[in-house]
Amino acid sequence: MKLTRRTMLSGLASSYATGVSAEAPMSSLRPVARPSYQTITERAIAQSGLSGEIAIVLSNADTGELIEAHSPDVPQPPASVTKAVTALYALEHLGPMHQFETTIYADGTVTDGVLDGNLILAGGGDPNLVTDDLAQLAQRLKDTGLTEVKGDFFVWDDALVNLDEIDRTQLDHLGYNPTVTGLNLNFNRVHFEWKRDGANYTTAMDARSANYRPVVTTSRIRIADRATPVFTYRDLGDVDQWSVARSALNNGGSRWLPVRHPALYAGEVFATFARSQGIVLKAPAEIAVLPSGVATMVSFQGAPLTDLMRAMMRYSTNITAEVAGLATTTKDTGQKWGLQASAARMSRWARRRVVGISPYFADHSGLGDASRLKASDMVRFLTAPDVARTLRPIMKDIPVVNTGGDVIPTAQGAVQAKTGTLNFVSNLAGYLRAADGRNLAFAILAADVPARERGKIDGSESPPGARQWNRAAKALQQELLRGWATRLS
Image (cartoon, rainbow, N blue to C red; front, top):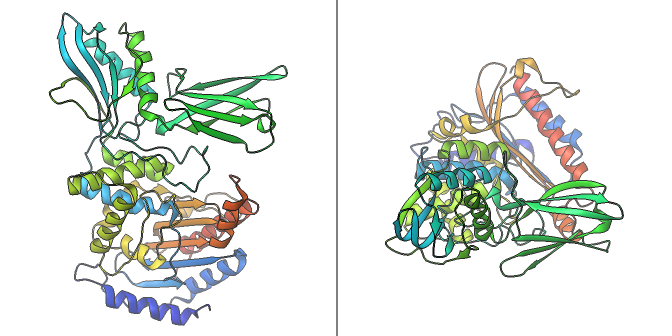
C-alpha cells in the first residue's frame, strides 16, 4: 500500500531524529514545508508513467533539513550509485594519493644484460592499466640494459582474490562484467572486430589502446551458422574461445568482450612489446606465489586514487570499483577477502560512518541485483560530515536541460551526481545548487524489479520494454532536476 506524502515525511523525519549521531551535520531535523518542491515531485512522478517503485529524497546539504520525500524508506537496487560509497570507502582508507603498481621482477642474476633466471610480470591490482602502459614498461625494461632472459616468463595476479566475473547472473559476453584479479589490462576486455569479405568475414582480436593494437591469441573467436545465442563461450584452459552467430553480424563492426584469463592476456601483450625492444620472452605462464628474494627491475605506477575514482564516477567502470573495494578491505584487514565478504565489510563501514543507515551491498560496483539502498539512507550518507568535500568534486557534472534537450544556462554546473543504470533500474544521487543558492542533496531511485527479473529470463542484453522504461526514468530525473535547480522557494 502506498503511504501518503504526509505519512512518509513524518516517518522519514522520525528516522532522521532517532538515527542521528552527535557527528551528524543536521541543525534542524523537521521537514520543511515547501509546496513548490512538493508540486514538482508529485507532478513529475505522475507524468513519468513508470512502473515499479520510485523513491525520492531532497534535503538541504548544509543543514540536513528534509525538503521533499516520496517513498524514502523503500529499499531499492542502487546499481552504480553504489560507486559513490565505494569511492569514499577507498579514499578514506587508502588515501587520495594511493597508486597501484605493476612491477617487473627478476628471479635470478643479471650479468652483462643477461638474466640467468626467470622474469616475472606482477600486478598490484591497477584497474586502469592499459596496453600503452605495458609498452612503456617494456621500454623501461630495455633501458635497464637487459637483452636476454634465459629462464621462463611468469605472470602473477594474486595481489587480490581472483573473481571469474563480478555477477554470475549476467550474460557471458558483457564487457562490463569482467574477471577481476591483481593483474588487469584494458579493463579485462579484448577488442573483437569483424568485416565482411565476400560471403565470409575476417575477424581480429586485439588489445588496443590509444597508440597500439597488438593482436592476441589468448582470446579467439569463430563464426557459427546459427540464429541464437549471439555469443557462446568456452574456457579452454589458457584460451578464451568465443563463437558469434553469423546472423548477428552486419557488414562490419566491433565490440569489447570480457577476458577470463587476464594475467595471460597481459603477459602476451607485454611479451609483444618486449620482443619489439629486442628482449625475447617465452610464452607467459601463471604462478600462484611470488618467489621470495626477487629483485625489482622496473615498475609502472598508476594514476593517484582520486583520479581513478573521478574516472570511475564519470565512466562507471565496474572493474575499478571492485578493485578499489577489494584493495581497501585487504589493506584494512591485512588479508584478502572475497567479493561478497568485502562488500559486507563495506556495508558495515557505511553504517558506522553514518549512524542510523542500513545499506546492504553485494559488491562494490552495483552490478549485482542483491544490493539494497534506501533513498533516505543515501541522502544521509551524502550529507554526513566531510562526505561532500570528498565526493562532490569527483562526481560527474549532470547537465540540466529543458524539454527540448538544450542545457539551461542558469543551471550550468548546478548538479554533480552519480548515475546508476541497469535494465529497469535507473538512479541518480548527488548534489545540486538551487536557484536561491542553497546546496541540496538528493537521491532518485527508480526500479521495476519484477520486470527486471522477467527480462533476465528473456536472455537478451536489452529485454523488451527496458529501453523505453529507462528513457522514461531519465526523463523523470530531468524533470525533477529542472524544477529543483530553477525554482525559487
